[in-house]
Length: 320
Ligand code: FAD
Image (cartoon, helix red, strand yellow):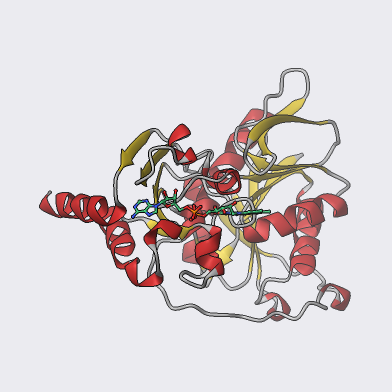
């Protein structure tokens, strides 16, 4: 029995959410009195794989097959399941990222495992194996108890934190058979040139809504985000109107985030928007309508015109 964590790479690099998933998986391995292995698929330099040791992985299985260069749900799930069987791992941890959301249920089916997606805490093991998770698009929490021998857990980004726990790593090449039936999806790669902070991993997010009137006014949102080292996000109507890319849309039908600080500018706070952001640690709302629903869930609220308030915040940050 051991624990296996899938470490998703983007262009050969790991993001913060991966180190968080490794930290979380290591804590579970310690709970269970067992070791932690990681599986990496795609071309990643050994120096990057060695980084996983800082967070407690003692073995990394490296899969570099040409057919797996691009992410394909079905094929990656087969490889992860095969790695779990090879390692005798009965607990498999993934990040609940965009690709993790597709992989976790597929891996669970292949291993006849129970699944907890959206985990936010470590399992409790007294009287069963129970994990706290988000439910109903982040509007509530639930406790899921897994009774199956094999278990798959998809951890919400920013829920556990990155914890150093050094182990010495061995890197092992793993060459699973890749079935052509797993490679039927057509992969289209869209490369976006950006130096910006990635939204799911961001600790600070500055988000704009329809109150900003149009795409020409996003300069101040981006400037504030740059000053805070933050990612930018937006409400659904804003991305529907093409003021901002769909990758920035947060909420029930967009991505769910849980940064340490979420600054909402000119966003009303509709329930579908809150579904994706309400687990942020601190919420700051800037809205000219004192009755805006967002103020009910805000930790700090500024009632005022965004076009006056935001430039003042920017000026104050620049003055420090
Ligand atoms: P509005 O509702 O138009 O609010 C604009 C706000 O800006 C107002 O509160 C206003 O007071 C304020 N404002 C105006 N001018 C200023 C100013 N100068 N300074 C400061 N404040 C100002 N929405 C999402 O965001 N994410 C989702 O995932 C999502 N999924 C949905 C799924 C379904 C099935 C449905 C039905 C809806 C979904 N929606 C989603 C839409 C959601 O219901 C709201 O319509 C949407 O969130 C509103 O966006 P908004 O707050 O930007 O715009």
